[in-house]
Image (tube, rainbow, N blue to C red; front, side, top):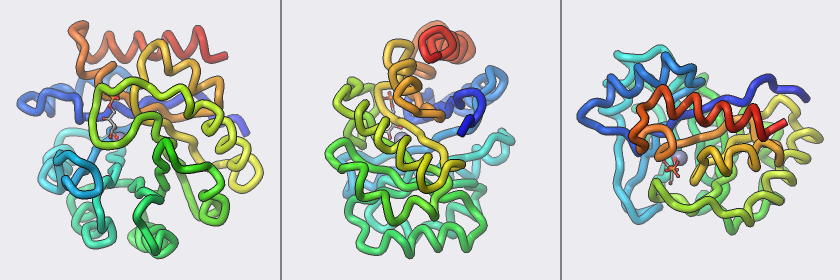
Length: 226
Ligand code: DX5
Ligand code: ZN
């Protein structure tokens, strides 16, 4: 199924938090499809990042969809709080969730888009039963917890496998990748089947500015991805 142009989801983990509004506005002007918000609790992953107050502030400065990547131990406890703050979608991890189907149903009951994320060591096969319920699948291309890590090339065959499963089970489901995405690795993931790319460092962590960085990434995809 043709899902149209590849979408870019800048991850604000790499942004300058003192200038967050400005940087998100720049990403929006440069054609960002959505803003990816990495929520970490220091327990599910060995790092702490941001939560509801940031979403609340972002909601006031952008009309873009706000996508929550929930790297926390009990996402169910916090869903409605995030929704009240202005979140539009949730990516919840397969790992450590004994009641994933319930979590996905809770997200949908709140009227929001639901996605499941899988870590590099988690096989694509775990998605089979839940996939028909999902709007998005997120294949982690680094181990979650930190920005600016090198892309794991071993995840490429898995992206391909997930792409095939999506075609068979839920063709309209998005296939998103997250971690180490830059102008070198983005085209590889697109060739493998990804249609939404999360990028932190390669958008907010470079000295050419957010707008130029987004264009550089998009050019790399257009030249190498098809
Ligand atoms: C990692 C996060 C990513 C991170 C990506 O746990 O899920 O979204 O911000 O950062 P880069 O693009 O720098 O790898
Ligand atoms: Zn993320």
